[in-house]
Image 1 (tube, helix red, strand yellow):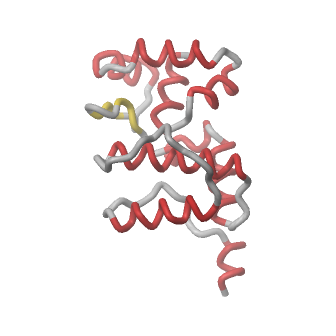
Image 2 (image 1 turned 180 degrees about the horizontal axis):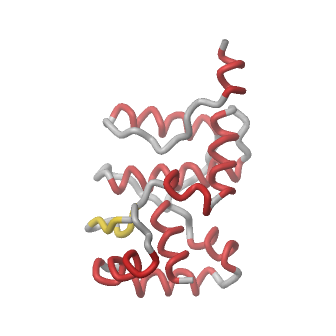
Length: 152
């Protein structure tokens, strides 16, 4: 479970989302993550469970591109697919904003990952535009065929 918590936090999932996925309480997830969120422990878990693609960044903690682990997080993949098709749900938008803010923080952009406020597809679009302006390629999926057809 520690390896899963580490991976889920690395891609940007909140403790609440991880708690839903693991069946343990939010506080248990938070406590376990705080216990293991240091460079030595992270490296040990990465090696033990073959979690290549996760890195430990000072001041940010663990970080990973969720797309490298999309097979382990189908709900995240579905959220990004719906966003790509311009049909995200409110829950999708919250999930995507948190993941993208996690990416921004890992790339040294000043951002409060936990401050989400009200979000919508427009919020995600603005965040993506800001990331691109800051020189960061957002962790989005390639444009889907459905979306290409809508644009054409």
